[in-house]
Each structure stands twice: as structure tokens, then as C-alpha cells.
Length: 222
Image (tube, rainbow, N blue to C red):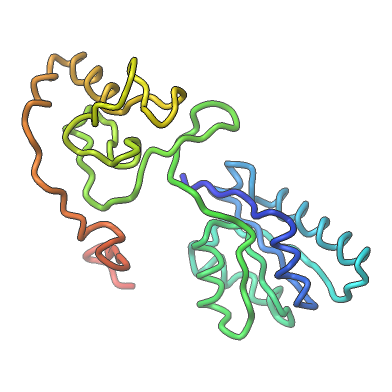
């Protein structure tokens, strides 16, 4: 899932103070699961803004609405009536949400209330860890189902750097060396010898460094 954290309130206030009528839009998918931008959090942010603006003597309105997903046109379009007459859309989704709102409502200013940070998994309640960099060329079959691109601090693809100690990464004793994890996993299958084979260079053109990516499902019309 995509994880995101809310920006500091002072940053949000500095942006929203410039506008009179604001619509705070929550997203009930990834950011709702990570308890940062769903319906409840959007309502809380709107209430905080109303109170602050009242104390500061700032006029206007702060309304809120939540859609199931801000990454799909049909859900974004469903709130067109609420967008009408607003000066600013303040999105609590990942960065996809405010960008799609900017596409669909080009005459209304849009601002993100969130900082998008990673594609992660739930490790335990209220704790998420990054597992994927969306590189577009997944090779984890060869590394025991563990991604060295995002889980190695140096993005090494052919073994450890030599800086790890006791199976922990040199950047922090709290971070496991991913290449130790990969070795242990492959060894559990009796495949640790696979690590002696040097892999070729990765095709980074499929990652974001190759420019904006588009995926089209063949056989279906847009």
C-alpha cells in the first residue's frame, strides 16, 4: 500500500490562509488504512482549520468530503458539486489524489495536505515498512522474495557492501542487512550458491528514471 503522513499543520495553514472557501477531501483507501488521510483524519483536519481560522479572524468556509479512491476519475468526478464555488481543494490522499483533482478541476487551486513516502507493508499495528520502489522490473525471485533495491541502503544488486555487522546494516543497528536476509532465505532452500552468480545490469528504463510510465491493459478500450 501507499503510505503518507500529514504535513505539519503550520505548513498547511500557511497555504490555506490564502484562500476563502476550502474543500478538504479525504481518501478512504491507502491513507485511511495507515490512519493518516481517511474520512476521520480529513474531518479532524477540517475542524482544526476552522478553529484556527476563527481564532485568526480568517473568513470563508472549510467543508469536507471523502471519496473511496482519489486515484480514479469516477470517484473524483463524483464530488464535482462539492467542488463548485471552492477556491482550494486540500487533499489528504497520497500525491496522486491532488494531481488528479488538478487535472479534473483545472480552474480550482489544489494543495496536498500529505507527504507521500513509500510503498510498504504492515509490520505490526501502526507500523509500516517500505518493501517496494516500483522499479518496473521485479527480480525478487532471484533474491528469495526480498527486494534489495529498496531494502538495501545502497541499492546493491549483487551482494552486501561489507559494512554490515552482526547481520545489521551499517546505517543503524535497527535495520537488518537485506543481503543477510537474502542469504538466509536462499540458504533455507539450499540455494545460497546462487549468490555466486553475478547478475547483469538492471534495466532502469522501466523505473521512474526512464520518464513517466503508463500501463495499458491490452484488449480493453479506455
